[in-house]
Length: 340
Image (cartoon, rainbow, N blue to C red; front, top):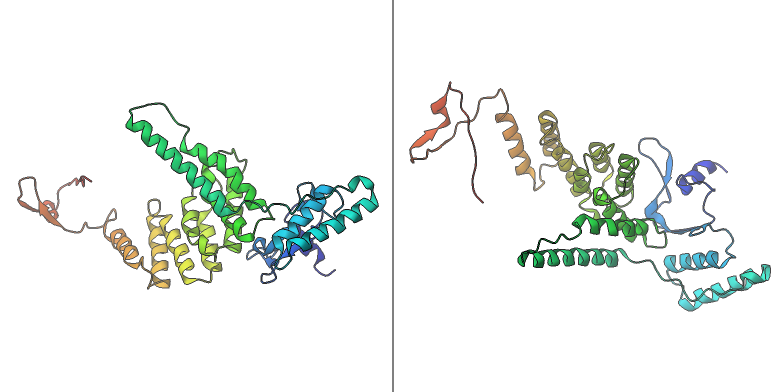
């Protein structure tokens, strides 16, 4: 088959064992897409509704109970018009076929397999756990108790495996998987897992979100999340934001990526910060953050080592007028402070 190896490699997503025996697809999305840098085809995760990858491996002809259960779950999760009655009729036909092959496979699937927990339900449970933690901590502090509660990060560590499992569960909807993946990416540093190669995992998460779900309404904060994860060993947030700006079709997402990329260098590289701010202002002159970017540039160009300090006036501790220019030619140390 022409390009058969490419298709097989992309559908299998790097796993051993050949391509899935069956894949349920969203017909409105392409299943394969070439990588923008390597040209190698990869599978579009957002297009997959269910696959033959079951709990016991790659299901071919569903015969064993767990195989038939997985196939029925796939039908249930991907269905558009199949009724429960029709699903159960298919399940009985499969059972009869399996029993005809070997009587030991005659056990029936008990009802339609339950759908995976939705992202909204899992997210709600996580928020309730966080709220309960903060409430108990506040109550203990009000009583003057010093008994330590489990760290807040402990709650994240408890929920991270749950969100991670949902992100990998192809019986969940693509939208639920994408949101779970975004949660894992945003909370990666709080996972409590000792990753062997955290940068590579972060990069994989970021680029999957960029390629598959960046246009989703719930992913509007993706650029900010990428910027916040800068510093993870081996993760290049700048490259990921360049990719996001280049692939996004929404001007808002493109502007978010450009501004977030500039923010990476605000405290580390003045020249790079100035360059990225200039790019942002030239490409997105109507963005609501234009005034802020112009302010950053103005400060960069006037408050640099080697530049003449801008003059300003004020009052000394006795209320007498004072100006910075009064100290021209003298070594001057200025301290800015206040209360809030």
